[in-house]
Amino acid sequence: MTDGQMNQPPKNPVIATLLSMFPGLGLVYTGNIMKALAYMSVTGCLIVLLVNCDGTDVIAFSLLLGGFYIFQIFDSFEDARKSRTRHARTDNGLSLNSTLFSGLLLLGIGIIFQLASLNIIRYRDITSFWPLVLVALGAKFIHGYFQNEKNLDAGGKNE
Image 1: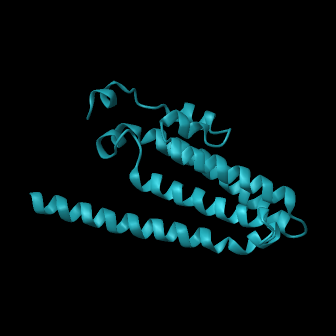
Image 2: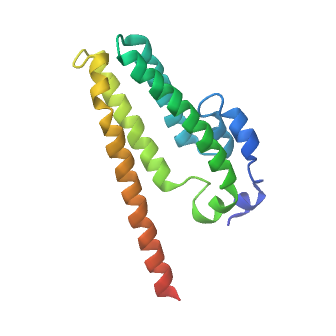
């Protein structure tokens, strides 16, 4: 650990949870800025979609917004809870996998909303993209699995 990491106090999960009542703020508290920006962007995009949709899409976006809101609160709690061990595994308290995933998520959201603002697709058409969220999460989990296996293999060879 570097001196800066040793001097950083562990983050309080209760404070992170309370701050995350405003999406992303709990992650700012834990030092995970990229993930916080991604969560703030996702929340904002879901609100924009909810305002611009009609019919049954209102139900879908309301459920997505509510589910994501609850998820990000729990994620802030977990991020703060794991802050003690994170310093040993990551650089500056940021997981490289979560930073890459957050960056790709922001890129995808930006592309979709740019296409909507250029009238190439309609906001209503965005509801047909929801399976891509499952694909992205699945790819993240698979990558994490193989990364973990690689770390276990490297650890076993050093013994």
